[in-house]
View 1 (cartoon, rainbow, N blue to C red):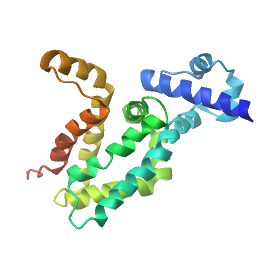
View 2: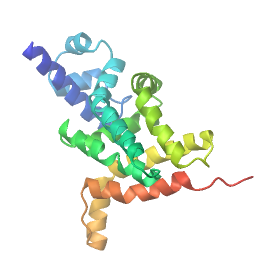
View 3: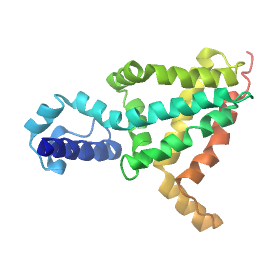
Length: 213
């Protein structure tokens, strides 16, 4: 049993790194098996297909992040004041940083994988997320909508996806941005500091009033 679990973990570790770096479409099962040093039959045995492997890679993070994020958002609603968008986005920082406990660099890896799912039109992955984590997503969307009731639902849809794109790009470019900030401005940041920098920008973007035509 231990050997089987070790093989499964090696496959997941190799797959997530390759998926994050190359994308889902450009990463073949043969490349994954080569990096994991297993045979193709092992992938078929543990996951059945490439789609199932992709979902399993994301599930390692989503199973940890989604409940934790939902709990943080629900905790805000117990407070006596109305949670602001800044409050809501800030409540996601700890759950995101805790993903580093799943894997070294887990925060960035997770956001890169999530971004890949949208960039590459992985419809099955969006179906998987909404089907298995829909209740948690609803908690988040309802909280954001309650804090910005002047934003129509369709506009909120677009703004939340713009927000996702912003955070994915920022985290994917974190190393390069840190080097520029250090060289040009003498500023040094860790991942938490970068997240706290981008949150006011995202919150302001989501809340800006819609212009009438």
